[in-house]
Structures are given as structure tokens and as C-alpha cells.
Length: 272
Image (cartoon, rainbow, N blue to C red; front, side):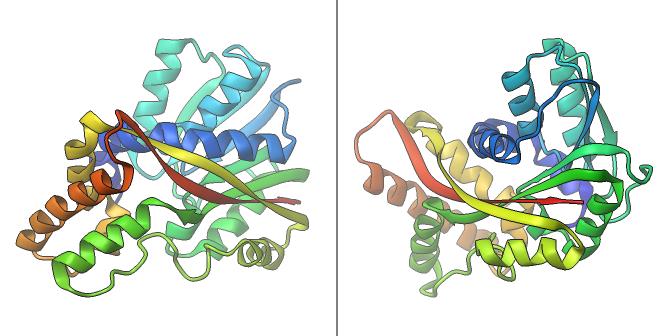
């Protein structure tokens, strides 16, 4: 899970199946933070993935907004995806850079706002990453983190896993309390942030019926899920799981062309 090459290799899957879903929550986090992209503000997106937060900023403030946005990720493939999109769509003030969230080579007190969407719970040392975000934020600047509170997809995966192995499956992303909003707030407070506040943001993770086979095939390739739910699965069990998962999705949603997995995100914001 902590190999950047694995995440780079997963970029196409993420862009196809996760980006539009995470975009909903990135927009909610941006609104909750109160951050505005103007007057030359500097905004940092930590663990940017395929750029859902960057897109949220651009859609809200415009592709030529007067702010400098730096999108960072430890996976070069993710950074390349954001830079490619920025060039193609004219996001003139968006730059990309490969950075490790736990050890960023960025100056102290250099960003007015910092965002980290659906990653802090995956980082080997979340406290170190939060410390780094605090370090690079300007005094009075904000840091906003987003984690999963609940995903409608997970019970379906657990059902398919139990049919495969006859055992309850672990939740892939609810690591060490991060599914709890108060826990998230406590982590920011422990890192030294003040005025910490949080909110639940609901949304839907979209999926078209025609994409079910490809979507299900992508699940065991996800580095986070590979290290969690699928860590004990054999290749044969993974193939069996895929068959059960396709059936579970179809049984759950019925005869529709477009589905939406209900989900809730924790959004927490703290001030330096």
C-alpha cells in the first residue's frame, strides 16, 4: 500500500471509478473550509490523487482564478495525471510536484490553505503528515482533511467476501478510528491545530451498469484494498469474489442503468 508505483499503476482505475465520487466530497470540504482562491493565495493539495480537490477549486473559482495551487502526491503517476489535466483544460495556476506527505521538501509557513482528501488514514504515520501540514501552513492558515465515515459499497464487498471465504471481511478503509468524526478532530488537535471543527458530508459514488465488470475487476487492484480486505485472498478466491460482487451489486440496485453508492465523509478543518 505504501509503494508509490502501485498507486501510479492504479491511476487509470482511480480516474475512471473514484475521481467523480471523491469530487463530491472535495467540493463539500472546500465549502466547509471557507477557503477562497483569490488574491494570490497559495493552496496545497496533499496526496492529490487524480486531482479531485484541484478540480473542485477550479469549478468553484474558475480555471484562471488568482491563486497558486500545488498538487502533490508520492505517486508520480497521480501528479502526471493532474498536470496533464491542467495543461489540457487551461488551469494556468496549477502545478504538480512529487512529495511525501510525511516529509515534504516545502518551506515553512508557505501555504494559506492545505487540503488532504481521503489519504491521511492511509499514511503510515498520520501524525507526522499532520505535523508537516501544520508546518507548511501560514499562521492563521487552515488545514482540511477528509476521511471516510461510511460507504454503502463496503457492506456489499463484505457480503461478497463472506460468500467467498465464509468469513466476515474487514473494512478496507476504516483504519484505526478514522471513520469517526470526533477521532479525526482529536488528531488535528493533538497535532497542534486550534479552532478545530468538523462535519459529515453525504454523497453518492456513481457507477453505470455497463461498467460493473470493469469496476469489480478494479477492486482487488486498489492498493488500499489489496493491503486490507484482499491481503489473505488467493487468486482463485479473488476470481470467485468478483463473481459474487457482480451479483451482489445487481441484486442490490436492480434493473437500472446508473447506480449510486451512498457514502458519508468526515471533513475536519483546523487553524494554525
